[in-house]
Length: 296
Image (cartoon, rainbow, N blue to C red; front, side, top):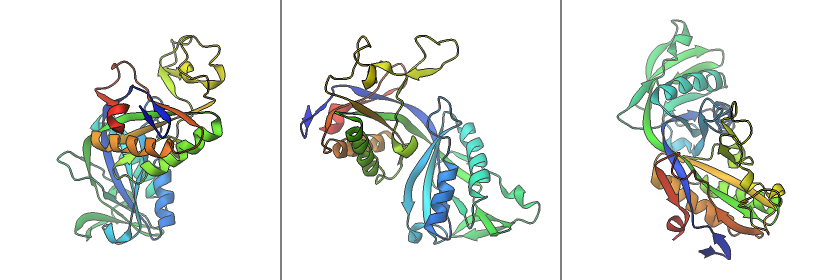
């Protein structure tokens, strides 16, 4: 299959189930909502070595937030619901409560919920109230009051949707990855958790040489600078730059849509040669997101 003269590899991205929570962060200005959301999603690229996978989901206009202020939704991903509870307590408490003028609200309606009890920070000075029809706590702080809901919905989502952008040079690959991330950012309910949404260091499970202590290492078959040295390299001869995008979403359909939107944007960039994807032969997760099916 070719789209805009770019080859679409006949392969699939292998994704796996995770638990997800979504938080709506509001503030007096969009700037402070973004700062708090950015802090709260830090160290959230991969469950291989991070306490969670996390990212900014979408910008929410003031007309659609519970308190009528600018908002941003973030998504936190863990393998189990208990992990979501822990991460929400830590990330809201350390990164959002501490940011000027912020408030937090549950961003998911679901049967499964986890408690996030932050009102104890008020040391007895906190009180219950309502904001936008929601039961919340108001915690007195130096900057006024921190408003927070204390029950958050959790759903079973999909993590690890991905595709590789292969281009003639590094700059072309990076440009294509950037426009792909921009396209994906328009879709509600998905995140691209790596820095700027782009993975520079695609990895494989385990290690060929350091298996005693490395859970993941560089995927040498997809490293352009050593393609002549690696037996079975997957880097085409005319490819000099490559980046990966990883996508997590609230459901499989959103991840597929995000992959399609991202690939459709990437192939329009001059210099892009091929789109592929990463999988582990079906050993990692139950979701097999076939590129040809997605791009039909």
